[in-house]
Amino acid sequence: MGFFEYLAYSWDHVLELAIGHAIVVAISLAIAVVIGVSLGVLVYRRERTANALLAVTSTFLTIPSLALFAIFIPIFGLGYKPAVVALVMYALLPILRNTVTGLRSVDPAIAESAQGMGMNARQRLLRIELPLAWPVIIAGVRVSTMLLMGIAAIAAVVNGPGLGDDIFAGLARIGGANALNLVLGGTLGIIVLALLFDTFFNLLGRLTTSRGIRD
Amino acid sequence: MQTAETMINLEDLTKVFPGQDEPAVDDLSMEIYEGEIVVLVGPSGCGKTTTMKMINRLIEPTSGRIFLEGEDVTKVNSDNLRRRIGYVIQQIGLFPHMTIADNIATVPKMLGWDKKRTSDRIDELLEMTGIDLSYRDRYPKELSGGQRQRIGVARAMAADPPVLLMDEPFGAIDPITRDRLQDEFLRLQQEIRKTIVFVTHDIDEAIKMGDRIAILRTQSKIAQYDTPEKILTDPADDFVADFIGAGASIKRLRLSTVDEIEPADWPVARLSDSREEMRNKIRNSGKDYALLLDDRERPKRWVTAEHLELGTPLEEAGRPAVAIVESNASLYNTLDTMITSYKGSAIVVDEGGRYKGVVDFDTVLEAINAMRPQEQTRDRIERERRAGDDER
Image 1: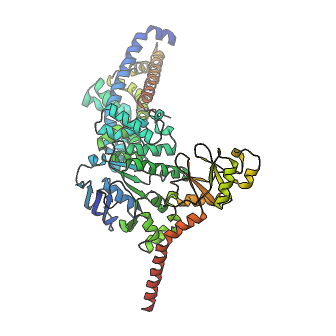
Image 2: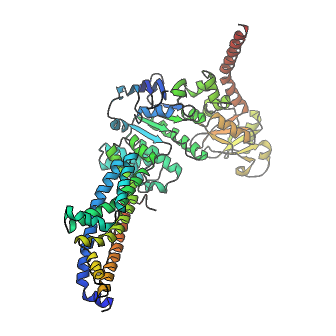
Image 3: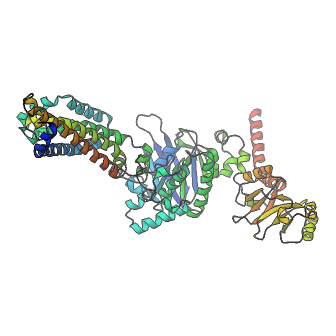
């Protein structure tokens, strides 16, 4: 069976896996954004804490994903849980790093004039610093998205949802009927999903970034 | 000025930054009256900016007290205090992600003004600062440096605070635009009469902008706190004299306006007058030239009796009247105009361009002479004092 024939035949199946893939990535990203941005806000003025946190989150990225998923089986069991926990860990670094960088790059004169006009710390953060850092934060989220799309495929080893299922299934019987098609379908699915997500965040970034600071 | 209410009172203010032995500001006390522009000026590092930032407590004083409108504000909520004090810095610091209207609305929003009131105020401020209303929905990046500066001032005045703090507000602007913005700001201040604390390191700017100038030496110690006229003609000590630099007397000329001096007697005629009448006027005045005005009293031509003999139409007779100054021009500018003018005289007009008088070197010299005796007296006293020291 050729690839396109295969695709026409098992379209439903691939779509189902793709939706699962998209969901697990979306959930993990959402959690990572909440944690990463909050941590960034908490530490961006504290040089040493920020550096320590960045070091920890970069260490996460160095752990081979296959190993991390396996480590989580005894703790979180199988399925969504270990997958999401691991993916959140991988997504943290770009989001945290860009949040810290974005907040730190706000022109001190702007922060000073905001303070001089009587904005308290919370108002400054919400009305001035975060909106100004936003394009940088979104850029971090996009990097994390790309990262998670690939790593999420490995989540299949912990019975996580997603296109990794087909890839691993294909790899397991390489040389057999449809093995290559399975791998190809999974991989192409991930690429298409990644492009869709990236387009979404690109649009979201444009829509939520003030015209005054767009290039 | 002495009868005015005290707006800001600084009492024994001291600031020691953590980790430093020497205070940045040492036991400073000063009073600032309502409606005046007080300029803090001094060499860099003298503590002038620190002093200013203690007024809105961007820098918290180590000791001492700050009074605003008679109220001790040393310990009140600093955010609330800052909403009562306009603040303009050199970099202006407009919020780039907000429109001009939103930038201006910053403090009114925090104070809970309703939409209509805020919006009306934005229009009013844009008009006041000479920015077209179509700029409301533009972003700071679309503005020129001068426009940004004006919006910075408009934003600081949004909630009509009684006090404005300005930290080198014209420092980052090219000299020509700066001069214009300074003039505009002084004109605006005539209307709004805010109490303004203005920080600069430029003594010329201080002389131009200040109703009173506080010359500060290190640790914000006041070397002299007085009107620009007084500081220029009677510097308190060598530090002040050095700081003013050379040419104090010339600088002094910037402080007097041409309408303070008596214009010279000059023959004036209208374009509609007969040539015979003009000739008589010139003959009777003892001057060579007469000034011709149009039907709206605006100076047009300089003519001699000979010019009138020629058949040229009056609108083109003689020479164009170009050396014109407004009555609020400084003597310095007037003198400058006169030096480059054809006959060594300047025509003074009012804001509408209507003729008010003519000044020439004689009249200006007379005015300069009137300023001089004080200085000469001071020099004499100084010489005598030195002579006395030598004898001892």
